[in-house]
Image (cartoon, rainbow, N blue to C red; front, side, top):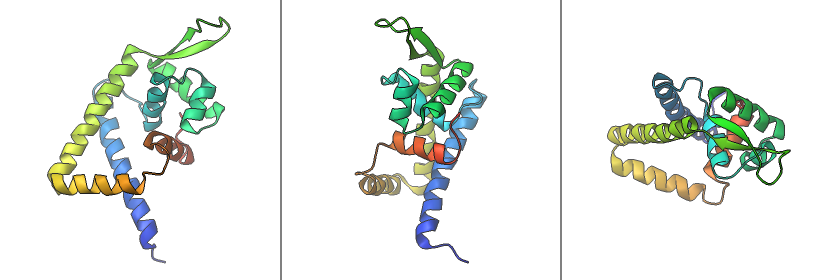
Length: 160
């Protein structure tokens, strides 16, 4: 049975996302950040923007508290996150992105830019801008791309 055009488009979009992520993860590993997954960067960005507990992280990424706790454990193991005493409540521990975590996020962002530049060289800068503009219009009423990507990761089983 042939795929529908809609299903084919969804697979192409997913394949494009996965291609970019695979390229960036490979280079991150080569540059001293092995084991990084897309969900790690989404979680780090949410923590850096104020999600200081597993509950807050879970809400921000639209994943369960347990899923957020698994991500936090993986980030701690990689040295990207630390827990610090909450200044207002000594019983609580707040999450903080480490210098290593910030380094990985900065490097990851520049690597995504490099992939984008390769795509622009391959398809032409104007065609890439047009594609981005069309996609932005199509998803304008949807949740932020970080939230959508986090949900996709959870759907595909990538929570750690």
